[in-house]
Length: 429
Image (cartoon, rainbow, N blue to C red; front, side, top):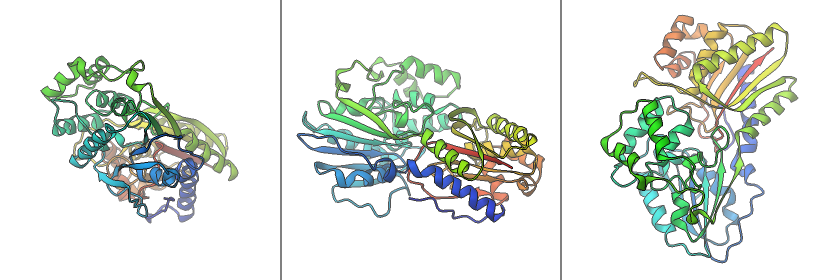
């Protein structure tokens, strides 16, 4: 689905329009219709069973569906509201489940997937289309752990400030489907995973918690992460993480010997597309990387400092970065996301500096669990929020969404159809 600006705000119209054009140009090569344009399904003697899971699941399935002549059926699981409206295949079931906290709908889908792939034979192929969000959309707790307990763990992981790689190490060791277990269950059938990366470093084992990829992390690492972030776990979860039977399949496991994985879209494509577009508009792109991680507030301050430095030298520059910042949530009633936290911190540091505009947004269309992809920044933003003191209070209370809502500066796009992490752009000059 192409990006459509749906929300009017008081940022000057030309600035807003240009910023939304940047976002759309960056997304273009990562949208499934483009990213999977050259895809050809593997040749199989038997049939193909399709599992698509994640926020881009229906768009990925729709992009390759006409090419799957040997398709016997399958399921597509996506976030509620993220299904592609015009995709209704007869032999695929479209299921909308909860994200970021899993629900019973996703659990039933995971149970069904494991049951049906168990019927595949040596000549068959499990084709898995995985995008960000699959971790919560296909929940299947290990024995002794209930969905309610898994939900409680998920909420703590989302609020503790851990990077996605560490969150998914814990998730994998509490799951009967993640960390390679989906492919192991399909054996002796072949497994081909095609992914859209929403993680820094494009680690195949982290995307959707790697349901078809051998896992190199361990139960001990999961326990260390729990201790580091002082997570308060149910007793059953503590026991599960101490149970050696819950160790994930490793690279030498024969049941993963027929599993392959590749990527069709990455954050690097996103960032480079933004850089190319801005260069064509006369800006000097300064790409900080496509895999930035760390505290969103500190990251916002760093980006602001770079923008002020560029302005002092009279440069017409575009500061661009991708990756995924983190936010440690201390106010359970707060409203925000990592992109609005980043941008509010950046605005406070800029303190109304003239000649600097920008945005920060999640490429899937949702920043956290609210209805926005991100937000816009321009010199008058801080005063429209109520001044520096008010903005600082909003940031400290995890209410960055509310701050941008007050300034009518939220970027609301709806589902984009892809998910390649976050995009941050500051324009100087």
